Length: 124
Length: 124
DNA sequence: ATACTAATGCGACATATTCGCATTTAAAAT
DNA sequence: ATTTTAAATGCGAATATGTCGCATTAGTAT
Ligand SMILES: [Mn+2]
Ligand SMILES: [Mn+2]
Ligand SMILES: [Zn+2]
Ligand SMILES: [Zn+2]
Image (cartoon, each protein chain N blue to C red):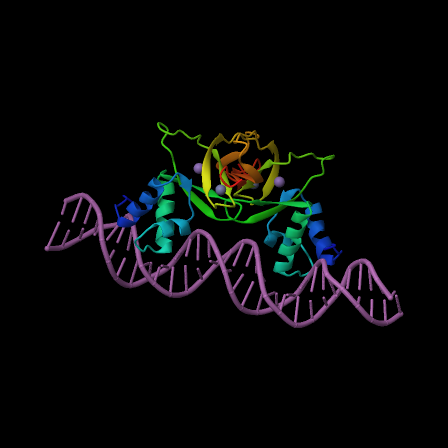
């Protein structure tokens, strides 16, 4: 069960180090020089999510997007934050805006997925 | 461009009249007695969305769910509300909780998609 | 150097949604 | 009542995204 260091992991992490946007598998694959299998990329991404290194968002295009989990000390982001997807430049960013809602205690929330869609500052 | 009345439309609307939950295409198809083609159901649903009769939510399972748009006079629901998807009973409900966030004016919001996932009151 | 098993590549599979196109049919026009 | 028009449908194929099984490769600890 212990994780191993592999070129694939490093390549994927390098991509995330280069931007603070959330990215889909195909975009990530494009940004990597070496050839990595699609399924492998998904497995690496999901493993990173399990390990709390990445988090996953599903936009209303039905696709999964992955983004770095900012450490609580530096660029702090609320645990549950909104995301913004620009239909023009096709990027997804994690917003600093926190998600808050009221719901009866009887509900058990296991996941929060909030995405706003439209045009970002540059594209509007 | 003018809409026509068809048995399909009526059958789909009848399904929505029977519940206040959001439903996916396959569930809707199951609830209809007469045989309607899958693509047709999607087209009807999307047309209803265009016409403001239904609204669409995409959950983190990547699937589209459709729900009635409540009229502003009766069971008033905020324009942008949260949704809750129960992983146990597999239902999606429109919550009365309104979605509020702060984002620079330069952003142009065209769509809001917020889904909480977990276990509902009955299933928790 | 060897053993153990996590990680990968590959192809197949599953599922959801859309699209083109021929056909049907609701509704307007005659 | 009949004809006309284009909206709606059925069907099959296409697209897209994500997962899975399984054989193979390759980190890492001993
Ligand atoms: Mn985020
Ligand atoms: Mn709703
Ligand atoms: Zn943009
Ligand atoms: Zn439930």
